Amino acid sequence: MLINACASVTQPVKNDAGEFYFKGVPLNPGAAAWSKDSARLAVIKDRSLIVIDTESGKAEEIKGVVPVFIDWSPGDDLLAVSNEQDGNKFLRINVSTGRHETITVKHPPASVRWFIPPDKMLALSFDRSNREIGTFVTYRLSMITSGDEKEFFKGEVYYNTLRRDIDITTSWTHPGIRPIEETALTPKFHRPPLLAPYTYFRTVDPVTSLETDILKFESRRFSVPSSWSPDGSRLAVSNDEGLLTIINVDNQEDRKTVNYDIHGFAPAWNPMGNHIYMGGWLINPDGRAWTQLLPAASNSVGIWSPDGKKLVVITDENVLYLKKIAPSIISAGRQPDSSLLKVREKLRILKDLYSDGLISLEEFYDKKSKIINVPETGSQ
Image 1 (cartoon, rainbow, N blue to C red):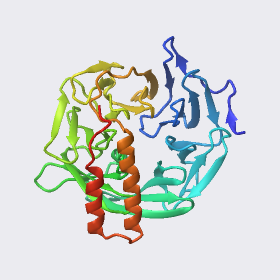
Image 2: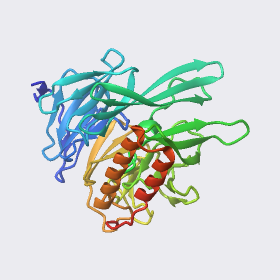
Image 3: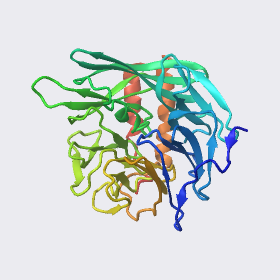
């Protein structure tokens, strides 16, 4: 047993409503991760890995881990990138016992996420090179499966700066996996001569390695965090003024700024479709209903529990707040109902057929189009 529950572990400060706050948590989308039953929360605090029971508020430390990025749901085990490991490794941790399995990969990972449990994971790594004209970063995405590693994406991005402290990873790690289609986002910054800079969003499929154009988003920022709707049809992005923009990824012209009074930089879409968190506020996807959770929190990150009933917010003061969310009467986003989950399963089978060479690329796209164009029988 490698879990330390002794009194030396700092405990969260809890109020009568069952909410709490916890100091010493870095402002990072990989600094907190929920268990798949939404009952426990793993947190990076002061270079330690802490697991919190969100009902009792009791915190326990998993010893021997100095993490910089963690992921939990939907897998049973916790994944952790640790800066104490020798380069090309990450940890798979059994939270019940605290025991670690070390997994070796080809390149030092910046983040690792669950893809399809129990054995498929995605790793992001990057190589950075400063030259006279700016910074060049090569991003790699790999799928890890039972000791096997497949690199399915590699791309270089040029940043017109030599500063070492620029954010070059949040836009890659924040959105996670696209729901239903199960693809990874590749948001590449571009600064063409005499034109406004922009980020071009594409997705790449870990199974087939096929890439799909999503949208072009004008922004001066090197890193543009985004968040998928529960059905993967829309993307929430904040513009350079910090205003929330909702974009239909199947129609780039269908985009709108939904609220001009709220400012933030990292939207987070509730997995049940009810709300989007950004800048201390809850906003309905239509922008008409909103509630303030925290004042002066425009520079903050929200991480939803899988059931959509709890939210942790990490502020730029390195404080984590747990908030309990009452479900909205209006759900402006489609929830992942049974018909959508059937679409996901059919797409998985189709990808395997293409990867095994049993169908052509033309047949793949034809069958995929027929699969995803299903009626919204369970939408709200």
